[in-house]
Length: 224
Ligand code: URA
Image (tube, rainbow, N blue to C red; front, side, top):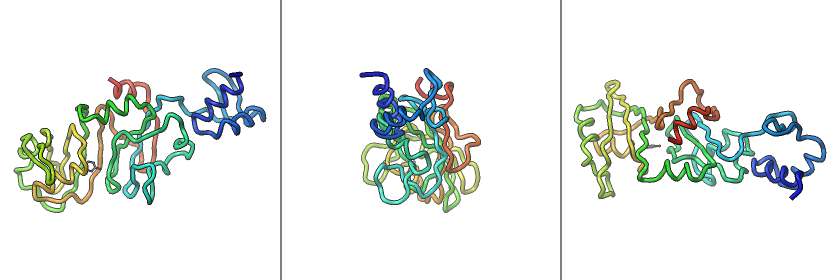
């Protein structure tokens, strides 16, 4: 493959357009620089394969690639969805849940982090319909709580009560609607749910609806 074809293939993999469109862009001089400082239309290129980013997910967006309604991918540049390898969410948040959602195109990392054997901690802030009764922390920590429709008990989870009707819950699993179903099993109801932490990562000051790339230290911490 000659250099133009190689470069066109690389740019197409980043989602900037088809290989043919990229060959034309190169011919037209829209791609400049070299090595680590390649630009398209004067803008630095997106990171190559191995990208990890975080989004502060607003309510009302779903994590799937194809659902109806608004998708989390609409909150980032359209070309991100045309990348090859494909960019996916690392696990999912319910449409109604807000907060820290990670994306990567690194399939090995993705599978390691969403594997049932991954024991990475995720922390959720819940606002509840009714006051906490005081028995919930022991129930969630017991390792004996069986959710409706399941037979394997939830692994022990850590509950920190932060108010009469607010609490933070740290899990190492990711079952379907797990936090909502755990509080339902305790006789309560989650009115609002926000994920504030995923393993070593926190949302920090990232505004709702905004995304950013992980910095090298964060990527390293997540990969460890
Ligand atoms: N638990 C839930 O119930 N919903 C989420 O989105 C994540 C964890």
